Amino acid sequence: MTPLRYAAMRGVSMVETAVVLTVFGVMLGLVMAGRAGGGSAPASDAAAQDAVVSAVYAYAKRNFRLPCPDSDGDDLEDRDATTGLCTASDLHTGGVPYKTLGLTYSSSQADSVGTRLVYGVYRGAGALPTDLTQSGARSVPNSGASGVPDYTGLDALRQAVRNAAALSSGASEIYVTGDDVATGPANCSNVVTNLAFAVVYAGPGNADRSGGDFDGVHLTAGWSAGTPHWNGVRTSTCLIGPGKQVSATYDDVVRAVSFPEFLGALSQ
Ligand SMILES: [Ca+2]
Ligand SMILES: [Ca+2]
Image 1 (cartoon, helix red, strand yellow):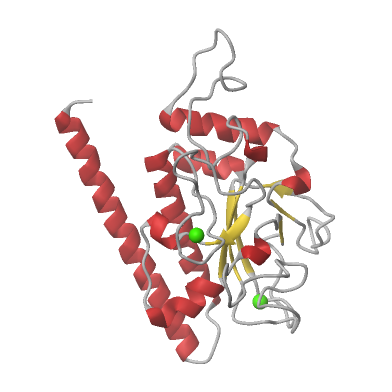
Image 2: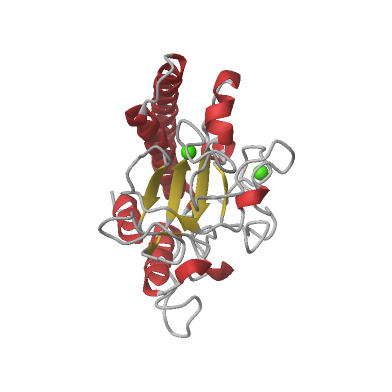
């Protein structure tokens, strides 16, 4: 890569980062404004989630992998810099790694973004061909197959997504349930489809008045005030279908990114 080309790419990357940070700040402001008024603001909450999703897309394009979740509450992904692996093989879900994504929030927003938004990612059993949190060369269909050139960079991530989509991981990886209507019951026995990653918002409150602010069978352990903050959800893979309607006992909002949706975003 020529220096000129590198400089141009770096410039675009910084502009993209600035745009994402600005959008995220505006969206969080809208969310908090909705709270201050005493009412819920579903549209703004959904927009704040989408800002995180956009930041994850940008991160994936720059790093050729998805970030690990944050299970100890320091806003950094829980990843071993030496091995390049998430700190535990069963780390599926945790807090949003805001700092890793280059996102910031003020102390007054800490309750909303620090305790009520959860991030989950497809780990592919921790194997390089299918673990979306790892970067490295992949070939078709598996890494290092003799005589088949390996893909690297963004192509390698795309190949990992295709490899993951070809598996039937079921409840061993993050997935969505039904919505209690078209796609069947919203319980963890009903595995509708696995996901590349997901951002889940606990909603305005603890609607079902049980456990934490997540409702129903959703992430029943959730955030805890001690350390590690998000350890209670680390092994959770069951996420309620995004189509489930808000009701008197359910106000969570799920933003689920399927393998095809993620592939599409990586191609833009
Ligand atoms: Ca962390
Ligand atoms: Ca809730």
